[in-house]
Length: 310
Image (tube, rainbow, N blue to C red; front, side, top):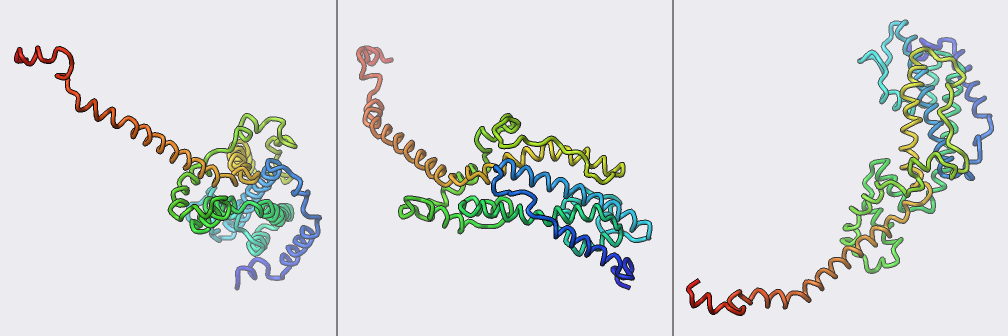
């Protein structure tokens, strides 16, 4: 007997799960007009969605795993260690699809948790679409996201973008561009302007204040679930949110799009400094050479010491 048949032999849970999907899909979307949100508000809202997604995933995993244990099955996430690790929770919450959700519902048919997680998953596509729309006029930033966040090798593509963005592209060889890549990487990893510092994060510069850590989801939590919410999730909201915003806001706002020009300016300043130093050395060289040929015996009184045998 298949896993699905053993959990849902009559197909009742499959029909219930389909009803849940229909209800969630029928709700108005997107939940707000993301296009008009500031970068801080937009990213902060997406971070909240992710926190709720992780918490709901943990609750579903914990409860469905407990049911499977009682039935004599070994749930995959905790079969080896006997507990759920944070990386496993994060991975499952991000990769879970409708098939896995249906199987979870078969094991632990909690309509509230399944509805909440499905709703968060469906809303994610609207966040992604808005993020992509804001990247359309930022070719350099888009390529750096693929390199830094997706770990892809995009050196050739970055070189093409740099050439296309440069007003002096005809003067830049491939070697010139490669020499800029190191400086580009450093500037990309550098924190944004002072506007994005922790001190300003809590100020009134934003169109809406950053919310405090929200209360627990409306679903009553078990003791370990509440501990997870008040522990890792509270720390993520307090510390991880700030780190995320400091990294992502300059990206979304377009601040990072100016990095190629900053790298070129840095290289030009280096070359100009080296040229000035070389000119100074060239001007001093005759005087230095003359001094080297002048011994102490050429000075007044030197003949006295020679005659004295000193």
